[in-house]
Amino acid sequence: MALDQHNVDDWEFDDDGKPVLPEEKEMSFVDHLEELRWHVMRSLIAIAIAGVVLFIFREWYFRYVLFGTNYDDFPSYQFFCWLSGQLNAGEALCMTGPNVPIQAVQFGEQFITAVKMSFVGGFVIAFPYVFYEIWSFIRPGLYKEEQKATRGVIFICSVLFFMGVAFGYFVIAPFGTNFLMGFEVGGAVNQPQMGSMISFMVMFTLPAALIFELPIVIHFLARFGMVTAEGMRKYRKHSFIGILVLASLLTPPDVVTQILIALPLYVLYELSVFVAKRAQKKYEAEVA
Image (cartoon, rainbow, N blue to C red):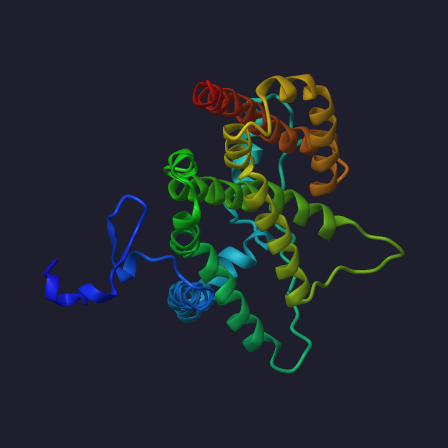
């Protein structure tokens, strides 16, 4: 870099006598806020672009994504019926869509819901870039060892996020929809409103996306000695009970369905034990 780009008289020097250029100085609180503002702005732009695309194709988005579990052509229904036959379980896992009319009873509800859910879907689509922007703001504040421990975090978190969304959408959502729409009391007829059905779809999918981030969270905790693989093995039985309770909360009171949900969650826990073991070895090597 040419010397005439900086005033030499304004240079400061570190303890080793090395000149510290202005852009290398520690940022002030206001500078951090400005940096954060630009990261947030770029993230919002990415979400807005994806949201506008979904709004343009809103008929497909609502019919086949948000309201997909209401119809017989939802792919999970065919898959679970096929799986039930392969397991010689008769029609235990066979389901069909409720195929009920979905109501919009409030003024402007369809337009407002279309705009809102377009941006929610835009966030899901743009999640890797949004996380990249967040991580770009956080990463410079980490120590060198912490930066090494978090290498590849954007890719791994994005993959786990989409796996969780897919699990919630293709597994939890169809079972939850069938149970809730098939449950009747006092002769009442189920005629879901637009906002209510979409709220449940969000509840079925986004929490699952957070649960699937468990291995990466365990990796960071074990990497810095806060969690050990031995401790996770010690409390494996307690964790299994917790997984069964979680599966019963996420699914209807059907043993087959609860087991179907609990097994992937337990596999996720065992994967986290393996991740913790590897991260713990790196932590112990650094301490030694």
